[in-house]
Length: 242
Length: 242
DNA sequence: TTAGTTCTGGTCAGGATGACACTAACTAGG
DNA sequence: CCTAGTTAGTGTCATCCTGACCAGAACTAA
Image (cartoon, rainbow over all chains, first blue to last red; front, side, top):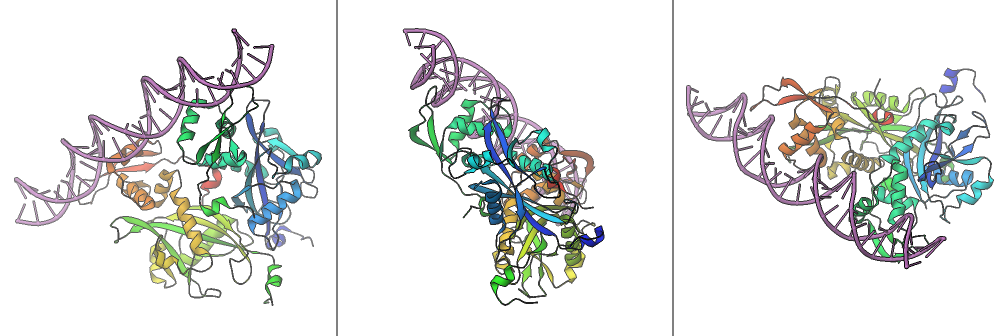
């Protein structure tokens, strides 16, 4: 039932929605390095029909906030991220041109090659899902709702995140080389880092442990593989998908 | 209208509420130092009637999230904090024994002697509002809902906050001595700091500027007063009350 | 066998930090 | 008025952390 004026519609109770900003590490021919990419979905309904938006949907009555984010992500993009963290709750009055919506936004990190994240295959065939560079002003300029600000805030949070060790671990696999971790840092911070110094600092952290294996098949000297021995952060910050 | 069983009530749309964790700096005879205190309100309705809880209430249809937090705080405690920041959105299914509630929680810093924060006088006369030490296990043990976990998370966030400069500024006045800033740090970190070293690091930050004034009236050598020349953090993290 | 690239360990200088001694400036009490 | 006591503020020293850089090790490709 539509409402005839603004005052009337604002008396409606606010709708609750959950959205997600998903970051992944991908090759960027532009810079030669890896950089951060994120998937967006094309809206099929008004408002903003046809424009790109963050994946999301209403909060189901039987879902916790985290479950709602994970379930919706699976349904709209096929992604099943191993890591979801709450970003922020957006609740300004004029976020949506129709009824008032309070959105609780999560952010996720997925691995490009993770069999658990079945995203790649699904997304390639779906014309309503596409990946964009996280700092691409072209793509971000025409997003639905206030999703541009949300993405910029997510990027800011990611860059200001202290415990990069665990972030790298989420974007990479169970075992990784130090150069791969460096690529994560370089993509997030958007600058080149000295390999030797980076190695020194990373080896001094207790969270990363060396293994006896080496990565073969490369073009040059095979690098040693390392493992992340997760130190627990605050419970709320490290929720896990069931 | 009550519901007869769990399945039925869970089909109701979740209610939206806003609560606030308020920190203030107060003398602590126990340790001799200053420490963090927070006000709680006694619940006058079921559920948890008579128990202590965070100040909060439902989200008004014409309030932004921030306005809702500020308005509710004023009504229930008389506090008008200069600084409110969003902490987290809590939305587990079993947070409330009656209907489902999603709470968006803010945290605030107030000054004990701020004329703007008219709290002290109001709160002293109201038997339904009381201050507790933020790490007092006795008081926190019997809180309503999941408010104990919320407070612990707020404390964790406060301690892990990077930009202590601005935090000190919020808890203190426009002008302050370096010893007062040190008291803030000592209260938050819960350990003593070397006055000389603390002075050195603080004077090296561009955010804090010395004035020509000194604080008179003390028992000993009058300390110089300083001023905070606020550097802006991310917009979302530094919302201001209108 | 050699050139090319990455991996890995090392040195060095400069800045930040903790421990601590010492002087400066005020009040309280006789 | 003088002295003791307390806090404000300065300076020094050793240590740790960080960025810049060098050089050898280990592998591939030709």
